[in-house]
Length: 387
Image 1 (cartoon, one colour):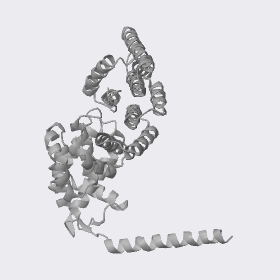
Image 2 (cartoon, helix red, strand yellow):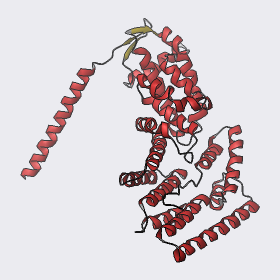
Image 3 (tube, one colour):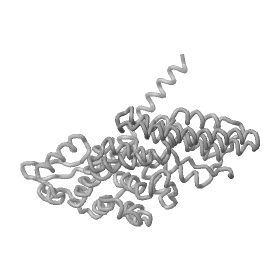
Image 4 (cartoon, one colour):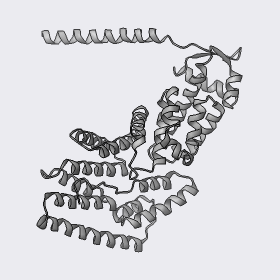
């Protein structure tokens, strides 16, 4: 086995998604996810993970299955322990480290979270561990933290991975890190950062252990839709070959992007509702942000339409979005009051008048305000230094 040959693909992140679907999906989705979850547990001998799910009430206890999993995982772990001992006695440092990493990966696979982290960390701290092996270990710990959704740990391992990659990580590992970070930024509602990473690594995506390309495109495209300028969406996302290749497998996402770009707002609203049902409501990374996302997309579509006019009637705006005048009136009132839309509603005349801010003047006022704050801080600092 050569240095750098290990990519920790366990535990399977898809199983964490199946667990999420069992808890949050529709009855049909739950039934399908339940079967896939059990099949995955059996295939990977996930004795500890199965015990955890039973304790959490996600699965009903099956003593025969539990015994079968315990025996299978114990036998496999004993074999890995033998390999580690053999490597210590017969092989060099490189082989010793790799056999220890394989053991840590298996502990992660069966659901022994704490033991896996300790096993990874023990190899990571060895003076004989190579840079590529350290990166593989950090990726393994990162995957484990994402599986159990430990945000602080995920961020720590991402920072660690960046440090190691900057010391000489190869192209493949750099690209894998970008893909992982893209998905994680989506889960943390950092859609701008996620969209930038998505564009960077889309054409070279090679991380099926993270998620299939279609799912990666779904997450990245949704991040781009809410943050990327309209002028860039078509070039960088809609017409990207990798997106075109899988877009038929992502219901409503392509329709959302195209309708927003083409200003077909009634189609956009239908697609947005579909995206919420098909993707936001069932993704463990996006579920917590579904209301925020749909709100921001509605604001974006309203602002895009208003940019084209000095004024327009509430009726024409309602017709454009395929909704009632009462709905538009209520939506605009709320967003105008919150300072998210720059317009004035004349309910008597039934007209919406735009009042776009003067960008240059706004920048000037911001600069003056920040300059005053800086001067005040310098004065305070000079006073402290003088004392």
